[in-house]
Image 1 (cartoon, rainbow, N blue to C red):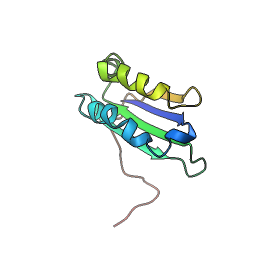
Image 2 (image 1 turned 90 degrees about the vertical axis):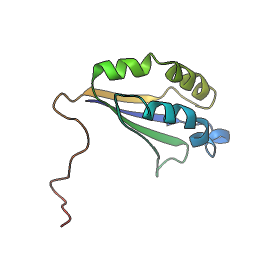
Image 3 (image 1 turned 135 degrees about the horizontal axis):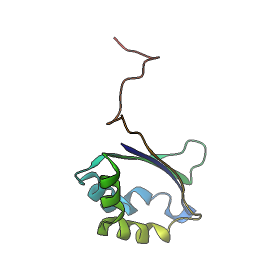
Image 4 (image 1 turned 180 degrees about the horizontal axis):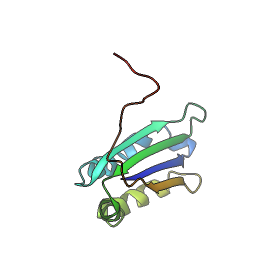
Length: 108
């Protein structure tokens, strides 16, 4: 699995409408064959920061994503609404295929 976390610093005038701004990009990405999850959150420490957590089945699925038309359009749409270059962590987790249960905190 390709696991990606991206932090977006959003301009104040775009914060309230950010999720609407990225809604087409989000829906299109979630519809990709190799997408496992694509989840937005807002930082509790910085109200101008949104965090995207994404997972793709493998490198081929990740490559198809970044080469898609909706990815290119999504970047163009976001470019005018961000105040800094996004920060990213991207890592291949070869023996993982999605979320698993947390061993240290179980609910019966």
